Image (cartoon, one colour):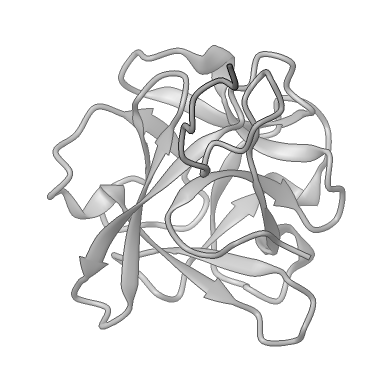
Length: 172
């Protein structure tokens, strides 16, 4: 099952192999850094903030997906074409390329599709369904393919506390 309950910090895990996660290459904050898969990234470049962006042109709830280490937006190329790699970019939050929809599969699996706002017919996808480190993450048109299905699991900080919990201070 997923931990998805709205805005917060999550890891995007492949349904096919839960330890294979969407990650920003090296957590690099440079504009245009490639989005890849990585198996249990020890540097936590696989933690993303899902920030509520409102109800947009899709008529659905939309989110910005921002890498926690770099602060860059998870983006897709203009027009959301199939087979183009996703990147971490420094863009305005008003730019359509920074907006995503999170859609439950409705099959009681706890899996989700992540679709670009620019095209509801495209889905975040792991290239060819590979589970190898460094596999490209891109857009694909067949949402029934296993590599388009993800679990969203709550991310924890280095002390083991969930990012989504309030800071209640230390006990005296």
